[in-house]
Length: 130
Image 1: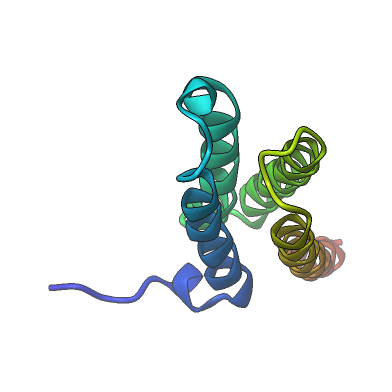
Image 2 (image 1 turned 180 degrees about the vertical axis):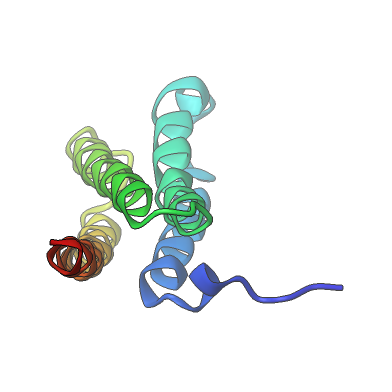
């Protein structure tokens, strides 16, 4: 039986999964010589974003969740750099690259918002302890 995990309802997880799929599709057209460099790098970093969001959500502490969200944020920055590099060397056309960068920025913004929210919960909990 399949059931929906809480992270699968998060907008940031949904959008980061869409981004990862798009990165897989875009890299399909890369030359074979790029299979072990740009293709691998983009796919691993792209899939790392939703993977870390889900892994953090599965942890039993808010502090750990935040740590995994920061890792996802780092992967987001890595994907952004790789997409821009691939644009500059001509592997990704400008229009497609610009669209990807816009989607990366959106995921980055939503992730930052989720981190701020989870940190506020952590701070609130700390205040109640005192």
